Amino acid sequence: MFIAMVVVFILGYTMIALEHPIKVDKAASALLTGVVLWVLFVFGADGMIDFSEMLKSDPTKWKAFLHYVEDAGMTSKLGMDQPVWGLEAISYYVTHFELLHHLGEIAEILFFLLGAMTIVEIVDQHQGFKVITDKIKTTNKVKLLWILSFLTFFMSAALDNLTTTIVMVALLRKLISDKETRWFFASMVVLAANAGGAWSPIGDVTTIMLWVKGQVTTLPIILDVVIPSMAAMVVPLIVMSFIMKGDVTRPVVDGGDAEFTTSRQRVFILILGVASLLFVPVFKTVTHLPPYMGMLLGLGNMWLVTEIMHRDKLIGGKKHLKVTSVLSKVDVPTVLFFLGILTAVAALQSAGHLNLLAGWLDETTNQNIYIINLAIGVLSAIVDNVPLVAGAMGMYDIGATNLPGLEVDGQFWQFLAYCAGTGGSILIIGSAAGVAAMGMEKIDFIWYLKKISLLALLGYLAGAAVYYFLGPITAML
Image (tube, rainbow, N blue to C red):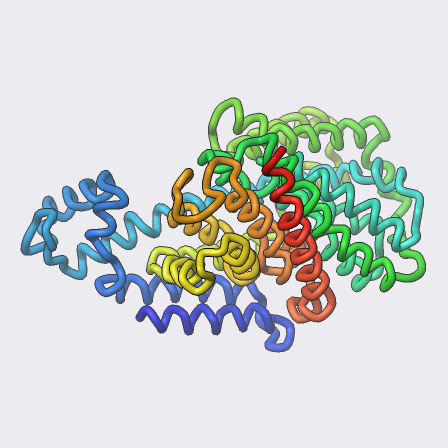
């Protein structure tokens, strides 16, 4: 079953990559892959789960499991020394401990995504983005690309790469009509968003993990990683500046749309939407509740405000301004794709595939922190970077002496934040930002692989080289 899970994951990944040639939506492939992997895991868990390791790693979970098993009479021998487990007990552990644990983490991401997408759609329906697009006068492709990339880079550091990508892709629809040109811009938004999130403590989920657990602190991660992250964006930008020629064509706007909202309403809803998104990291810092709670608070607030704003005006064509109507426009297939791919990766994590991969990396790289992290970054383009970083955090303790740079704000942790944050850009499904852009713009996997992946890899290696040469200098300061 252990090997079969690897085979199923590869087959599912191939189906996602070949979405357009085989004419099967990637969400369907992802959902099937995720569920089948858990089915294989639950039937083969007796040969995959090491209960002695579970005892060492989480005694509280072990005692809760043991208490349930004893009450239910699921084992012929109880105790801490090699109990004999029945299939019912093993199935219970997989479904009530492993699956529910991962479901909680996945649900946080999905609710965050739903909240962010709905807020962006509310702003869009109220023509809030028109306030920004009216200020961007240039139609030159190169100028527009640089403006939007730097805007994305710094927005991603303040918000996070997923939310920023959702906002910017929605904005691109108001600026560019040609599909392939918009794909180039959306791809650059993904690169810029991932690069911008890597150097900020709240910009990327992996950096947040390192920040919350104490491996990195706010000021050092910003000062030491911002320049390499900018290099990861600027190098592809320079190359793309020689490729992009001419001007963009703006979408034709129906003049009748202006009657739905006033200029004051558009500005107000845009400010309210951006404030709701910016409030999320503040909410997390103050309350210590997960980010999705802050996102849902922002959505609830916008829902209430728009209901009051339009309660006497929603007649005829204005009904699309109600949040109940906006929800029907949210891209549900993208959310289901997230659910499927994260569920699949969670199965590999619980079954031990990712831990084996991390151990193999440690051995084959001769414990070179730069090679280890570069490899983790490349792998994050294939599998989710969250379990990869979690695996690295589990393998190495803060302040340990088995590797250099493991102290707080050490080079290992900082370079891990950079690599895991930017490496996912190499493939379109390698990051949450890429998946969101892929879902919203229907970007073809093979197209991204041919047109963007090499640029993303070039930027990734350029930023890594910058960190490698600047690291010893910043360490002495």
